[in-house]
Image (cartoon, rainbow, N blue to C red; front, side):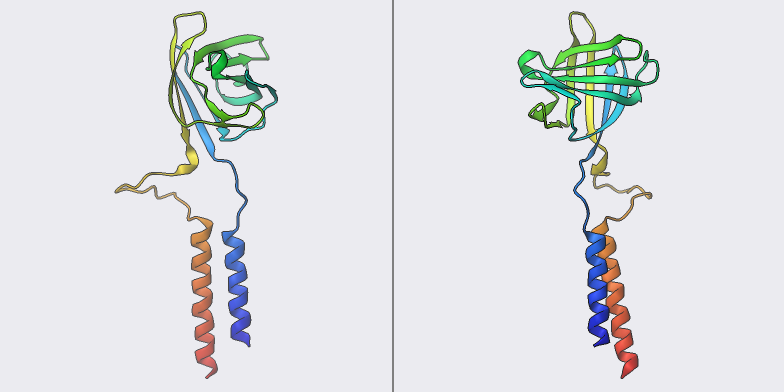
Length: 179
């Protein structure tokens, strides 16, 4: 009876460790070219303002934005129907740091967008500047290779399997001692 109770407890603990909330992935945005900037956002966001068929705005995005007062800007991502691309506005100094045309950088609706991964070429709106925006998934982890990152943390499912295995070893040892 105790063995069954121990196994049930180990299984419950394993389920708790393996269950997790489905979160959006964390994306890294690196802008290079005639203006450089970098920031991070979730793959899916809740826009602060959106216009169907036009684009959406995210207010107070923190990152590395040269020329901004506090490295906090408003980002606008435009629909391909109106030229795609994006805009970086330093609200606090009322300065446009960059306005571009290019690819639409998201899928889905403007009210519920999901960012696209990849490298996107853009041009300055009404100007001659050229830019490259690279969006990568920080949660994807390193690819298979000969030298994995030693700071990697095991996934919850791996920890759950370890705990359940230890629980079963403990239970079998207790059972043998009881005989």
